[in-house]
Amino acid sequence: MTAPAIELKGISKAFGPVQANKDISIRVMPGTIHGIIGENGAGKSTLMSILYGFYKADAGEIFISGNKTEIPDSQAAIAAGIGMVFQHFKLVQNFTVLENVILGAEEGWKLSQSLGKARGVLKSLAEEYELHVDPDALIENLSVGHQQRVEILKALYRQADILILDEPTGVLTPAEADQLFRILDRLREEGKTIILITHKLREIMEITDTVSVMRRGQMTATVKTSETSPEQLAELMVGRKVLLRVDKQPATPGDTVLEVENLHVIDDKGVERLKGVSLSVRKGEILGIAGVAGNGQSELLAVLGGMTSGTGTIRVNGAEIDLTGKHSDGQSRRARGIAHVPEDRQHEGLIMDYMAWENVAFGYHHDPKYQSGLLMNNAAIREDTAAKMERFDVRPPNPKLKARNFSGGNQQKIVVAREIERNPDILLVGQPTRGVDIGAIEFIHKQIIALRDAGKAVLLVSVELDEIFSLSDSIAVMFDGKIMGERDPSQTDETELGLLMAGITEMPDKPIIVAVEEQLHAKEAREAEQNG
Image (cartoon, rainbow, N blue to C red; front, side, top):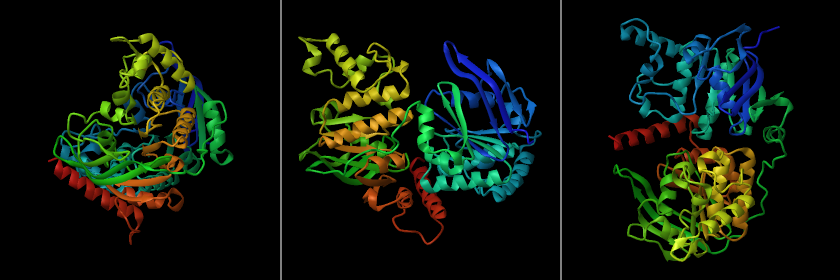
């Protein structure tokens, strides 16, 4: 019988009182794509960090191709034929592709010899695995998809037979993700073994041969992908049945709540981030903003939420909002019926060292029910927080616990509860389920739909197309600070939205991935010129 490419036996790892991995055993067969899924904190990253030498297991054994192998550090992992492509790339931005590939793997004292050898090897790898990228291009001038290729090339240059990819599609357009899957398929055909860590069940079903499910530091199941379903995997992850699709009735939009006309934003470097954005959102409607991160969505939320200034016109319920004067701030926005769940909960939505009840009061501390004469009524705030925690299933339901001691999903529930419970006329919500467990995703989606059904307007920004399609009644696509088009979710598909996300408004007369790459290259060249 063929020995597993990787076999972990009885792996355990604790960080103080927290048991991150508990007696985990897993076999990954050679020449396969093996998916690993689980909720946040399930122990996936810890397990892969042990395999790649970042952590040392408290107990257990690692076998590579049937041989027991000690992996005390990442150099030992590389020597054992393991490569890892991180979610946040480990590339030097002002180095070329070639320089990044040989970094840490130079041979001899003459750098020119290493560069010459690498150039030839890269050419062979590019042809063999369809990993074409200009070896002399600076990393900072490459699209995200091409930077990811460089990370894969780095691993292959070091002769990796086993590749670990951590959330590889989080920052890719649909066309780039499809291209990545074709590359992974080619690597599998050539006998490489791939471990894919992802929270996207659709990707697991599409590309993997086998999938392992982790829950609370333990391995709950390993199944052939062809013999399971997204619903079964979700239940194995959470420990209960999970509704994967959003259950909602057709929207019945009313009057316009939010009007945006010719909105421009220039950042502190003088770069124009919003270039004449116009849109509107009605009562009882969710307008989803789709796009790859970095195309103006964050600036749109920031100016609508009063966190930055801009020029143009914004009206809420027909009344114009000041964009540049002393009344342009979050407090004035809340007074006008705007609630805001920011994209980054830890830096913009919460103060991590403050307790939950203090965070619930932020922005709403002038509420009369929070006041006791000239002072704040802390007891009333704690009581109100406890009620919100119960309604939004925040765990543990302890108002005195610091924000940093909650999981990511429960931190998000605190922010969502604070904003939705204010009964706003319009909710601005950015990346509502980023880094959130699948059970919490289901809950948060229900709250957003309930707000819409109560006749409120919702402006949703998300890089997850599945989420945009599931929640939105109308979809606007942003690219390079502009609205490229607006579509009815029932009248479009991922291919059309993916093209719009790359700035392409008509079906190209060339392969889609080529057209997407050309457009993204052009955008990044413009940004490089603007940034000097």
